[in-house]
Length: 107
Ligand code: AMP
Image 1: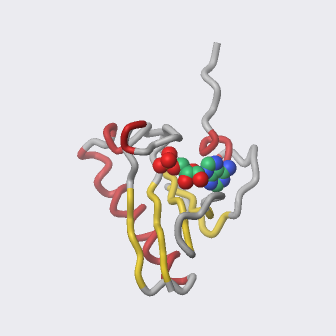
Image 2 (image 1 turned 60 degrees about the horizontal axis):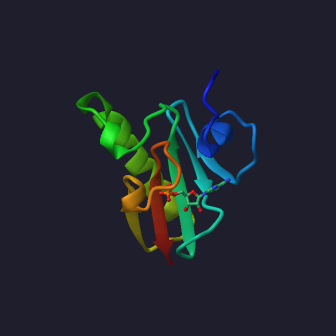
């Protein structure tokens, strides 16, 4: 039996709709459906890592990519200040166990 896909895997596979701002071979950037700031983006890697806990040294270029893509997109949307956040584990506020970077912006 195959495990049920998480919502972000379904978004990556285009099985469910989302507001996509950017995508490339390594990641996708969407709007969070329940924004916690005037601009709230999620940068989701295609690599199926569950959380920041699963990140290894080999992923350092990927992490840099996620952060710089998030920076570029939020600035493009007019943010003058922003926060980058990984929630890790259910006690850390993580609800979806596919790595994602929250980018919260204010203009
Ligand atoms: P986390 O709590 O760090 O796992 O963050 C998950 C985020 O995904 C939450 O901020 C949700 O609002 C957001 N979210 C859940 N489902 C969707 C969806 N279908 N499209 C966009 N964002 C979503």
